[in-house]
Image (cartoon, rainbow, N blue to C red; front, side, top):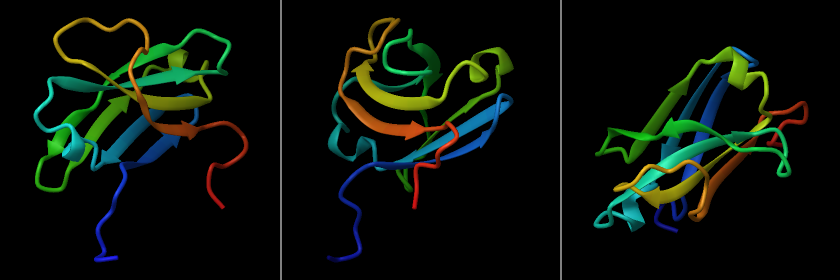
Length: 113
C-alpha cells in the first residue's frame, strides 16, 4: 500500500574477482537516533572466516541510499556471499556480532528469479 517500502533492500554490482559496489536503501529509517554503523562482510560459506569489506557510507540522506565500493581482487576471489550487520559505531568491529539486515549470494547460482 501507499507505494512505500517497508524493509531495507540493496543492489550489488559485482565484477567477479575484481570489484564490488553495494548500494543499500532504507537502512537508517529505523535507526536514526542510534550510534550505529552498517558493516559489510564477505564469506565463502558460513563455516569459514568472515572478512570485513568495510562500512556503508550514507551517500544520499534524502534518498536513504548507502554505498560501499570494494576492489581488492585477492579478497573478492575468496568470497561468494556478502551480508550487512548493524554494529556499534563507537568501537572497532573485527567480526560480525550485530543483527544481519541484508544478505546476497554472489556464487554461480543467481539470487533472483
